[in-house]
Image 1 (tube, rainbow, N blue to C red):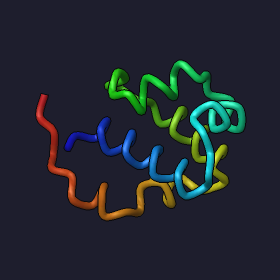
Image 2: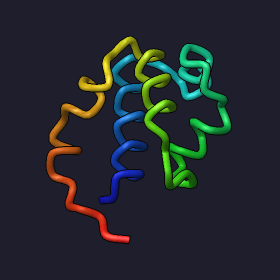
Image 3: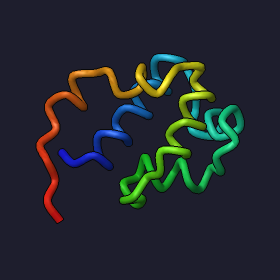
Length: 80
């Protein structure tokens, strides 16, 4: 799993936990629905930290909360 896949997975996980749709998350976070859809559908490869911060604000969590999961702790280094 790469970082983009992990971010998509985490967003969907948080949506389920908070009973939010992608549309509702986009409204709460101020990130366009098309951007959120691109992220969760693995079409966005370079997701900016500002976008992640806005999504965290929509979830009502910190960036630390977003990344503090086993999912991110086990990612291998990506070489491009």
